[in-house]
Image 1: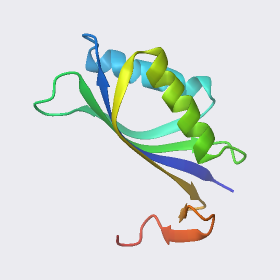
Image 2 (image 1 turned 90 degrees about the horizontal axis):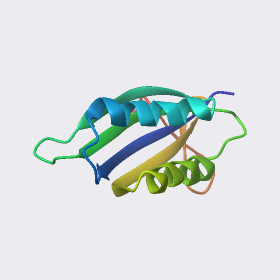
Image 3 (image 1 turned 135 degrees about the vertical axis):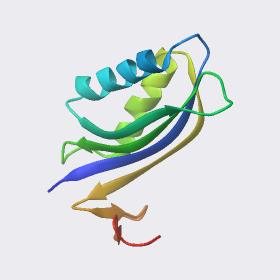
Image 4 (image 1 turned 90 degrees about the vertical axis):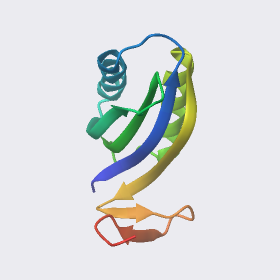
Amino acid sequence: MDKEISIDAVIVVLSDLAHDEFWNKFIDFIEENNWLFGGGINPKKNLERTFHIDGCTMVQPSSTADEFKDKFIKLVEENNWLVKSFDIREIVDGYYINPDGSQGKHVNDPI
């Protein structure tokens, strides 16, 4: 079983952290948890020190979206960042998992 967590988040940093430094902190977090990340981190246009994370994290089959969220929020708090928006969804074998635990749409299905 393949399990991923999709993440769409906007984070505001309160220091002069450069894009590369933010990217490195995020990837260090992913690697410390033995996860893999596919996606990107882009600075938000016209919003200084604001970064958009958009992608999927491959996690262990026993991991949950709540576990990912708790660890991600800890990363944010430890770095004194702010969460402007945050959306995660669990994906199992290519299908989104609905909040009630049922199988949702395939990731390739039209929205």
